[in-house]
Length: 341
Image (cartoon, rainbow, N blue to C red; front, side, top):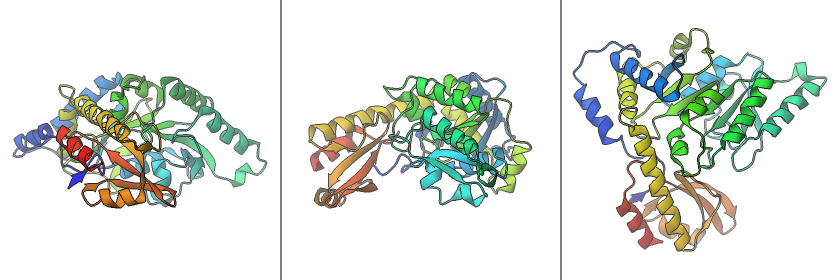
């Protein structure tokens, strides 16, 4: 069975598995205090151009989003996000569970705009009853977005400027950050992401790791006793080495970018394959997620031999589906898919 369901369907990149095996019998201290976590943190700071950044390792994206948003917001504040944002749709109300509302903006192609963010903030403060409402407390966006689209450097700069103007922290969800950075259409560097955001995370789970996300606070703005709050949320891994070793490996010899570049090459070939076969795309994505419109009969036929993700209903006879590539996608997978299309 061919699978393009997501970018974490396989275990982990072989180089990571090799390092985990090599270090398996070492006796190391827990909770992220081991030498591999320290080494990974140093490498991440260097890659981000932020020697004074604070870096923490968490297991997954939902825990990361919930922790960052809930610890940075005041009790009366909510987080601004696109209606298609991960925290708005696919996190089972994890943000609301902590008592914070997601303040949605429709956006376009999965992206927020500086203009819409400022309009929301201005409308809120212009309302004479705003003291009875949820205050906008921070801005959340994903790079790439949930639809595989990218913010340009100009767009991110404009959003960052609006956030500074209104004293709203800018949080960038980087679950698939590598694929955004590696995209042929990207014009933003990791150092620029670190400069424009107040906090962001470097996704490992979807970019070659077994699990793990690296949170980077860039403005001397780490919430007070953040490690304690991670544990309070049940998200502090005792065997922190598992995360440190993986990120130390990902940031050795450019592995993180090599994984991402491979996935992008495979996505571009997948895109060409669907184009040659006459299929329609739901959105133009320059990253590893590709969204196609399938006739429902073809969808049924194809799903017997290929795994992919349902995304949304297009009309009565068509469905939007997602195909994702990763480090484990091979040329032979694409050749086999081509025969089925």
